[in-house]
Image 1 (cartoon, rainbow, N blue to C red):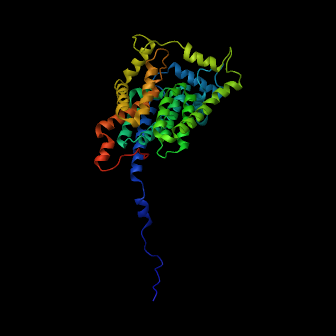
Image 2: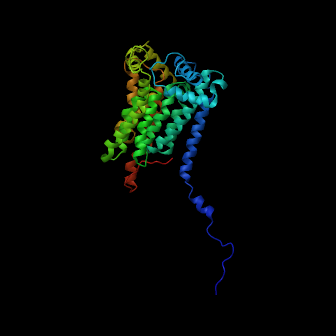
Image 3: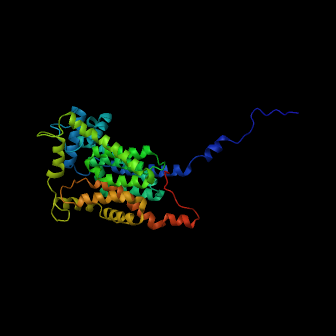
Length: 381
């Protein structure tokens, strides 16, 4: 005798299975990152247009942004090859999309709005990079807090500077180099993103050796040469667009505005700001101003970079980037007042990584003590 099944048979409720499949830990990480990003973003937005005081560098970037937005050209007057144009073109894009120059109280305020957007993007990418490098959530949160709450960071991130535009691209390049999927696409794309950063701010090229080291450490030995060659080719292809632009205008060299002449002016003819170790020099005044805003942060960053080279191999590329940028600060020659902006994300990562190591010890030793073969680098959020 066959018994008909009821019209609405009772089965395992689908909502329970769906609830059990929700990645709670991932959501918790996303919540922490979103909360910290929103908090630091709000801090940077308060009194954005009045502090710090307007600097000469801001006026130059805003003038070129205004020319690109309102006049459709790269400079109000004759264009010079002192910087690649992509930095202020990105700020100009923000101004076009939001009518910033028509809406903001002044031109610099419009530029500082774009810097706030760049900061928020940098904060998100810093979290992603920290987690991909294997930092715990509390260490990643510490890195994000140092990056956002430092008085030096607040002052530099608010200023309209090409370094602020380049930082998200740099962090994105390092995040791709640390991808947990170990695929050619992300590795190679990191080279293209670094080229975008260099076309946004010429100083970004200083972190190229560190990115190459990050790729070298991440890629299996039998594919290292190939991956680095492809990443280098993409970097050259993207960066070569600036050279092609100059060539099409007949301005690679010559007596007028030219790319080679601009490079010569930038690297040879800029007035020296003097040694940062000589009291009264412009370079010393700049570094003194940085340390006056935050003395502990840069010193901890330097100590953490040295510690990472000795005891934290997974953070060695970031340590190399930090130390190369420090060398650019202390070298004789011209010191850009906003160059420390590039140091901030790497310093925050290194301090957080060193703090995690000192608090929790060696992760490999902990894994061995727990009977596990090791702790892989995580790609979790």
